[in-house]
Image (spheres, helix red, strand yellow):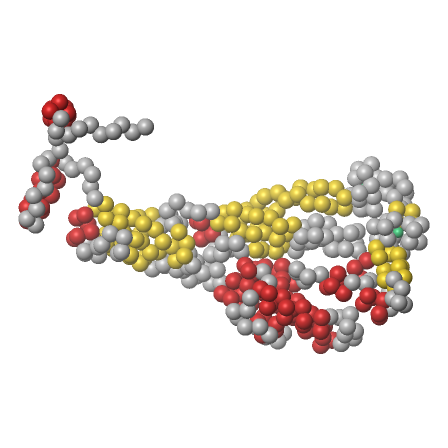
Length: 384
Ligand SMILES: [Zn+2]
Ligand SMILES: [Zn+2]
């Protein structure tokens, strides 16, 4: 197969084009290459599919971001095949029924068995699961054709009767004057061409039942937040004889208490003591995936501004899980709040070296009471 063209090039817009510019370019091109206008023109058919695909990606902010970042690989079928159908603008409605009457074609394709609708679902995973990849099983309720009547809605052994209003055609022809006739979905049968006189008791004539199916999905390591995976044929059933819709699963990664994702890197904070900050050294911590790692504290570490990079302990690259980002550890120097008598003594020596005269050691409870009586330190206002 030929190399795929850049989607921006296909639509003839710049990489910084706004949503409105993209939609405008798409509409112009889709009209130009629409199959109803280019009957028998294979090149137009290919162009139309190309334009449709480009638009389905660039009109979706998530897909567009993924495409900008990973190119076609970020939005190909294994990653998110949802781009293959026209989205947003349904050209069937766009041109209305006029095209059908201009070209005098048979019943419009839209009248045939319709493909099932897709199901959009959200899957929440932990950050560690995004790092290691995970397998998830959950249930998805979907609408399926009733087995007892095969989706016809008519009681087993009976047949839906042909609609009298449209004589089984499914559409009515309206003369709008000016010599233009247009077709409308039959209001007697909703376009099916048949009506049910004896309904199926299982589905009460609707032909549809709700089914809960178990779905197991494998989420690859390094999955980006809000990634959408498409599982073809796991959506709602179509009309009898038409394929099922898709399951479109959007990934939502929960915030982690310790680690924050920044592209391929992970960020975290660790507190260290004054002596460690001043003198340097190493400490051990546990990575997101549970490995013990040593963090090297540089001598003279400054609180909040010193960040230590631990290579290879970030997130795996989605397109190449062997490669991993780094872990960035921001060091926070903690001021001690409780000192042992020995520490108190050492800190006082340090202070003396710097020519400081710290206040006398903390008073005991009795001297505080004495102050209160003498009115030296008035009591603080009580908190409500
Ligand atoms: Zn039924
Ligand atoms: Zn009818």
